[in-house]
Figure 1 (cartoon, rainbow, N blue to C red):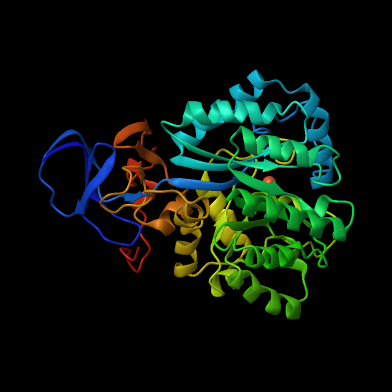
Figure 2 (figure 1 turned 135 degrees about the vertical axis):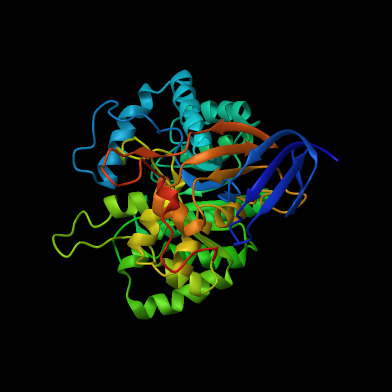
Length: 434
Ligand code: FE2
């Protein structure tokens, strides 16, 4: 058997160790111990974790890396961010958006992030962002799956040309229907927008992913309407509520009724931990609410939950680096999900769960799957998050497309080791528990 790539001695996310992964013609052909075969390239994993690639289910690639254009967000609020983006929009050019997006995709690939769902603002009659990101999607297709959401940032009904532009964007090839019901003029308009957007998705056989209830208002309940419309229109498994931060502030009794409705309707949930923790609670003095949606409770009801990055260096967020392990780390901290099982779940919230939400085909580490994965300088999923582990190798369709040197530090201390490897610090009780 002649292979294109053979990975030796990997640990898998499910805890299996000393596994070899054989790849041919862009696919995984075998995952088992002790594979002996000729291969164009052999990667020695050294017992480190090999995971399917990171997936970001919620991003804004039309805005990324625009930090400071035309000015900074002084208040740090969502609403100033939207206003600032409104100032920048008329100044955007297709060329500049393409250049910034491609630069971000380079960064993403270096971090093992090989699939991104990006919202693209359609409240610009020129559809600059749509044109640019469709071009980017074509350009990056060999190494990154980019899924686009038609996002009426200024409100489907609040912005006079939003619906027409949204339909134009879908006609041009944008994949998913987006929305922002909490930004419409009234609760009623918000609910109407959810209904209309779900109908568009149902008519066209598309998925729908709404920015839903991104506020601290406990009465913002568009997720209830989204769940209702998803079950009414048969969108189970194709509908997603992004952010859902109002759930953080809702009355507990109401949430106890809401969670089963979300589960019943097959609606997925995406929290954006880095953004939620910085943008929500801005009108609080003390105590300040965290704002992140109720992740453990959604999980307990069987809802698919993912963590998104949302923003990197844009009008809403000055930081970020395309590192989904940083996202997972923040998510698990904010949700106080610190059991071993919880932390493994947080890793899945930036890998397997968003892959399911995006509907990625051939995702995973089984024979027959795409030969896409990342070798991390960590022993398991928990250590990967704890260390924000270095991506030693990133593989796409059986080819190594990015590599990083291991993180090692040289010490000059008498009687102490000369070199330390952060991944070599095992929990006292041992590891190999996935
Ligand atoms: Fe967003």
